[in-house]
Structures are given as C-alpha cells and as structure tokens.
Image (tube, rainbow, N blue to C red):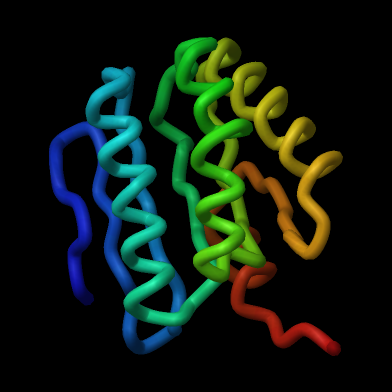
Amino acid sequence: MKYYYDTPACQVYYDEEKGYIHTNWEGFCPSKIFREASNAIITAIEETQSGKVLFDAARTKSASPDDQKWIFEDWMPRAVMAGYNRYAYILPSDVFGKFSSQKVINEIGGNTPNLEGATSNDMETAMEWLLKETVV
C-alpha cells in the first residue's frame, strides 16, 4: 500500500494488489483536512492510473455545505479529468452523514457522465461491486 494522505480523520491509500484507491473517513472532518484528503485522491488517481475509488464513510459525519459545493464545482471536474471513473461508497451509519452523502452522490450521478458508482452499507458488497470487471 502506498499512502497519499494519513490523518486520524482520513486516510487515502492505493491498494497495489487490487488496483484501487481506498479512502477511510472518520468522524467530522474539518474543511481543511477534507479538501487536502480529497486532493490527495486526485494525486493518487494521476499517479496510479486507477480511476477506481472506494469511499469508506461508514464512521463519518456530514460534510459542510461549503465542502459539498466545492466537491461539485471544483473537485469533481478535476477528478474526472485525472481519470476518476468508478466508485463504491459505504454510507455513514449517522443519519445526518447519510443524508449529506446521498445528496452529494445524487448530484454527482446526475451530472457526471462516464462515472459509474454504487452505494452500500457494508465493505464486502462495496468491494465486490468496485472490483468487478466492466464490459466496455
């Protein structure tokens, strides 16, 4: 594994064996850390040439409205340009985090062609979906 970001609130690493980028989010993530970690995902996509990202947000809280807007307007276009094309998202157990996540996922899904994604409540299902072979 190669780490691109590693703090108690978020870790971003590349799983060389399985060929995907793994993110792990914990609790409330301050905006500075949220954006640094999100930008580290783009760096990982560029360096590894893997557009597959697992977002483990099971233990996270809601992202701020400003960070949600930043994801739509700034991060997403840059991530797609870098090669981001497939994600699995493990939904938070926290009701506010789940609501915030669903809002972001719905907005992204409706406005980002060529990006495949799935949500799940557990790691096994998310990994199975993320790593399955796609037919082009």
